[in-house]
Structures are given as C-alpha cells and as structure tokens.
Amino acid sequence: MGEAPRVTVLRLGHRPARDKRVTTHVCLTARALGAAKVLVATRDPGVERSVRGVVARFGGEFEVETGVAWRRVLRGWPGPVVHLTMYGEALDDALPRIPRDDVLVVVGAEKVPGEVYGLAGFNVAVGNQPHSEVAALAVFLDRFLGGAGLRRAFPGPVTIVPTRRGKTVRGRA
Amino acid sequence: MGEAPRVTVLRLGHRPARDKRVTTHVCLTARALGAAKVLVATRDPGVERSVRGVVARFGGEFEVETGVAWRRVLRGWPGPVVHLTMYGEALDDALPRIPRDDVLVVVGAEKVPGEVYGLAGFNVAVGNQPHSEVAALAVFLDRFLGGAGLRRAFPGPVTIVPTRRGKTVRGRA
Image (cartoon, rainbow over all chains, first blue to last red; front, side, top):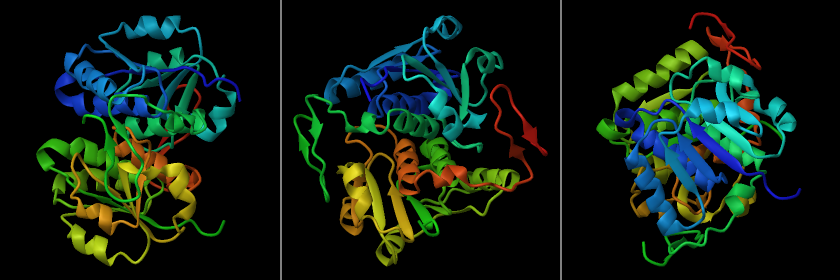
C-alpha cells in the first residue's frame, strides 16, 4: 500500500444549540482516526475553538472550517464522495470499490436532504441500524485506512504515553 | 473462530441533563456493533425509553439498564474487563491478549474515577488522542468481534434494505 489517501469529513445538519457536543465528537474522531480536515455546514465558532484547542495542545495538521457552502463542496469534489447512512449498501460490499483517493466522507445529523444520496458516489451503511454518526465515521475511517489512522504520531506540546494502568502525560496539559 | 463472545458495555459518568444524546449514541452503538447489553451508572428513564424504542422497532435482544451499582458490577465481573481510555495501551497491542470471553467494556464521560484503572484488567486506548467514547467503543467492538457485529441480522418489525441510492424500508417506520 502506497501513501494513505487524504480524507476530508463534511458534517451536515449541525444545529449549534443542540449538536455542539456531538459535532465536536465528529470533528475529534475525524482527527484521531486519520482525516486531514473537517468541514461543518453551519457556522459555529464554539466548535472551531474546541477543535483548534485540541490541535494546539496535542499536535498535528488537522484543520476545521465551519459555515461552508456544502452543496458547492459536494458538487465540486474532485475525488470519491462517501455518504455514511443507515440506508446505504453494506460497508463490506462498498469498501473494495471506493478509490483510495482524495475522499470526502459526508455525515449528517438526524435528517439529511434527499439530494445528498444522489450527489454521493457511494451511500454506505456501517450497519443498517440506527446508531451514531460518530460511530459510523470511526469504523469507516478505521476500515478505509486499514488502522493506519490510529498508528500515526501526533507531535504536539502534550503527548500521552500509552500505559497499562494509570496516566502518563508528557508536556503541559 | 467459535461462538462470538458476549459483550456488555458499562457507561460511567452519565449526567442526565447534559449527556442524554451522547449516552444514547453509546447505547445504540453498542447494539449496532454487536454488544448484548448496556449498563448506565446513573438512572435515566429517558435513555432507557429511547433505546427500548429502537429495539422494539428494529429488533434483536439488546438490553439496557440504568442506575446500576457500577462498583459492584466492576468488582464482581467474571470475565475480562476492558476500560477504554486515551491513556491506555494501544489497541493493536492489547487486542491479542484480551480473552474472547464474557467481556465488560467500560466507557466513561469526561472524568473517570481513578480506581477504574485498577479495577480493569485492560486499559485500552483507541488512539492516545482526545476524541469520543462513542468512536472508541465502535472501533473496539468492530475489531474485537472481527466485524461480525455489523453482519448480524436484526429481525424486527422494521427492516432497512441496503440500497446504493435512496431509502428502502420494510415494515412500519
């Protein structure tokens, strides 16, 4: 396997009053599991601040942008577009057909506009059951990147040293 | 590989006012990715209702219980106890040593009492980065069960038929 594909995550349907925590989970999961960038359709400076705070302390090049024109992003995306939805085809079936390229992974909140199903090249179900877009994103990234997302080093001012019991933190927490 | 190990998830640190959505994501992720039961430390009838509503419509035997005496559960657990924490040892390193048995997977909210690290036989990091207990649980279950959690059938009154574009739902939604 050559260089890992670059992954961007697009988060739709974010309502700042209600979804701040779940959207922050989406963003940090994207970062921790190997995506390079997250785009959030609705503008939310609070989410940007939280995510940039984690990047500043824990390192890496991860980018976050909120208030993006998502239709334009979807229509103009040069690589494969993968929409994670409980209605889609099974992950096991779709995965081998998704080009290992500059991919856009779309995750919604509760309701996703119908046109997204048509704009995505792949509508993929991480299980055809209702659960969590955070979980779906995590499993998709782990499978798509073959676990490589979790094995990357994050050279930040704060480093957590893997420990069998207790906590070992290097740097300023 | 023989019969799949039975997995129970224990959710600690749930505050009903603040964590209802994230805890519901934890519960539904547990169900969709192959766990048999979830225990939530704090009592929350709203979370129980949501999860049981999904089970009633979409099927399966998944159980939810809130307001459990978590220390007693942890101390008396007969099988392996796996605590998912960003401070733990790497998933890749821990996974081969975890017995494929009646396992208890512990996920916290923001702060987990220090004694949990001692009571768990395995403290496992799905990446040593801050992200989401929902994501960590999803990846752990997917890896521990070798993807089998996602391949199970859920014989409920409502069935989603995997579809490449659009939505196909059988039964009453």
